[in-house]
Image 1 (cartoon, one colour):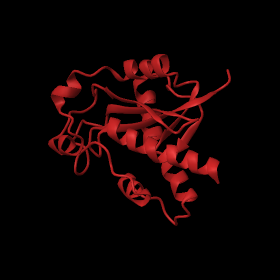
Image 2: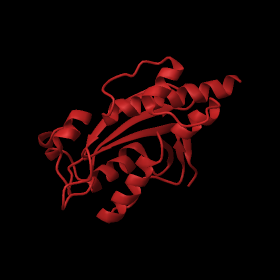
Image 3: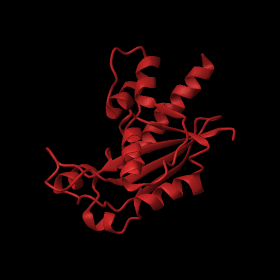
Image 4: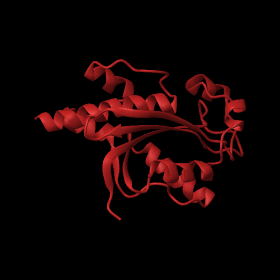
Length: 185
């Protein structure tokens, strides 16, 4: 099947986290899949989505809530990881489209979660690491965190940094900018 190149799915994950090592018996779980669909032709951000996922191997710490704003009560109302992957495939065509994230953490976390849950990986082979792409295009000697990359471009961070839907929205702005700049060069 040919890959659809009309949109790129920009993804940002949030996961349970602690200021140090996880408590005994807990491991990091995806608790939010932020998604922004990016129109390749125009660089326009089309949709801003938050898929809240119910954790199976951990609880949301006070540290995690302070960072992401997500509470245990909110994630308890979320869908299972398997349902979230099915939603990505069925509603957003994730198997047929390129997807992007800021760094490799999100890709590795998806691979790990799919393996531990026995769930089919929801994406195809095409992944764009926007963090690395940005550094290379801008001629930087090292990759920048998302907030610094936005500042570099003179873009304000929109929403709450470390909320998946907001970070995906901001990452898509960077990627859209890079696509349009590449075409005008």
